[in-house]
Length: 249
Image (cartoon, rainbow, N blue to C red; front, side, top):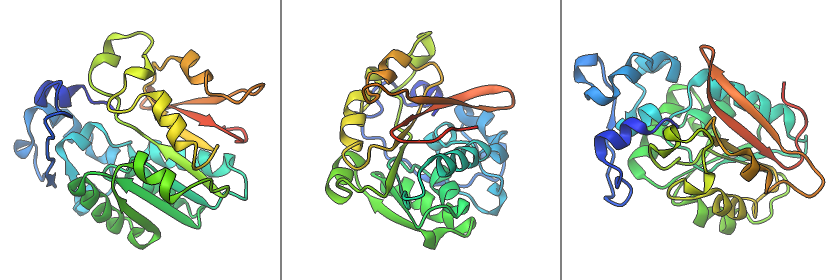
C-alpha cells in the first residue's frame, strides 16, 4: 500500500483524526484531487473494469493492490495452500482488490472479507458486483484484530491474507523498513492475533521490509517463503507466506 500521498495530503495524524473517507467514481482527471491524479492515470492497472463504475475512496487510490498483482497473488496462494484449505479470510479488504481476485480464482469454497470503515466496505461490495462475485464473498464490518480470534478460532481449513496499513511515509526513508513501526498494528500484534485463526498466514508488506523481523515468526527449523510482486518491472510489495505452503513460482 503506497500511502505517502495520503499523509502529505491529510497529515501524519490522519488515523487519530478519524478521517471519514467518501466513495467516488471519477470520470475525468479534472475531478480528481491533485495529490492522487497520477494514480487516476493508472486506474486501469488498479481495476481493469474501472469504467464500469468502480468506486474508491481517495486514500484507496494508493492502497488498493493493482489487479494484475492481486490476481497473481490469488493464484500463488491458491496453488501453494494445501487442498484441505477451503476458506480464505481477507483481513483488510479495503475496496476489494484482493478479495475479488480470490473469489474470481474459483479456488475457495468461502471467501470472507473484513473492513472496519463502512464507506470503504461499501466500495468493496460495489466493486465485487461489477466483477460478478458479490454473492461469493461474505462481508464483515469491524476491526479484524477483534473479529478474527472470535469468529475464526483455530480453523484448520482456513488461510488468512492480510494487507495491513503501513503507517505513513516513514518506510520511504528507511532502506530496511521496521515492521514494528506500522500503524495502527505492528508485525508482532498482527502475527500473534491473526495466527490464532490459522498458522497459514500471508502478509502483504512493503518491498523494503526487514526480513530479520519476518524470520522471527517462522516456526522452529523451518524457512518462510517471501515473494516480491512487480508491476511494469518494479517491485510493488512483497508477500510473506507463514505456515505450511508449497512453492510459489
